[in-house]
Image 1: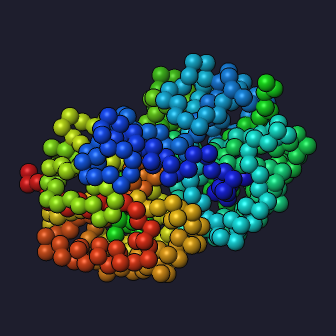
Image 2: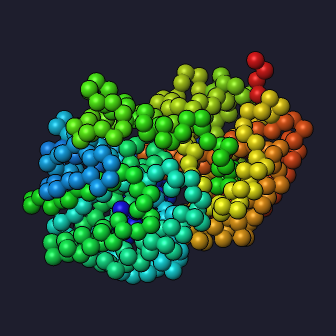
Image 3: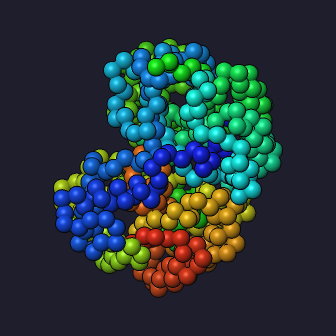
Length: 241
Length: 241
């Protein structure tokens, strides 16, 4: 589940990459007479200090604590160390520079381009998948994962072969669409040393909870999962407004 | 040049990923009785606040300003906006939270796993490539690049086909090894909205400067380069100590 296949068109944050870069440039020229893209070299001198840099619009923060729209109903370490137990999970499409009062941890990740999908697979997924946030999707899961050094030492063709030709990651996932919606976030290449490589968020209706259990069990039985060295499975129920 | 092929074993920062994570965990349990990996669940409660998070050991900061080990001898925008002119470039294997006094910009990126290489290609590169920092490598180039939305909308198989089957990115690069050493840094999936997707650092002997010109010209003539929407070519000469 919580892995590279979960990145369809439906998974993009609302703001687009192009817009984000316009935003970035607009921010960099704030206070100058110039505006927007395609400006003269003089405006480039407003390349921003890092501390003023705009946040990547594809960044999501997952705050484990006492507030948030999801109630944590179960959390267990599948492999490796657990996360500290929390009552609630809050999900924010922005940076959270420090752990808020009452929270115990913050995980972060960015949605990104797909790393393994072929065009044919992407089209199959796009036809079947749903976006997060359907009214009936009262149940969910947050599954952070870290893969081991052996995985990252594989070349692209080798990782693809393990992920799909040997493990059927995409094919397994397809069986559970559109019931299970998901969004994959990458953490490994952030500037900070993050505890996980990926964080995947899922949601589904209560009636599909057993199917979700089947999905994660099927993926955990694959060759790909032998490379997982830390995995925490946090089950969620949406808090009624 | 400044792209996905430039990630060989020789390009890794000195500290390894595994070590970094040990460092991360050690930091998270600082002040607690527990130490190291494989510890009991209670130590997991020390998952760190973001503000105390360890820096990714694969992070490099490129500071354009008045100090640094490289003198900037030429800088030009190949496509899109230039960067503000600077006298020197400093390269640091750490975070630089704000633009230092006298500096005009800071670019950042992390080295990462290869995204396109096959095992056969990686082995070919590993046999021929040199690491940055050879005593004779008095000349260099920093080439930040941003690819357009069309590139990032391609699937993995499509990007690979453009990069290698149509553009011979790896094959072209191989011809200039070991003369030209390089290290690729990824910026697109940082938490901040960065102005570039990649930053590549090259070094070579003065006698290979013409060969380096040939290399970048060959790559800029490829199908892959039609997806480049911003590229700045900053030429460097090492400052004598």
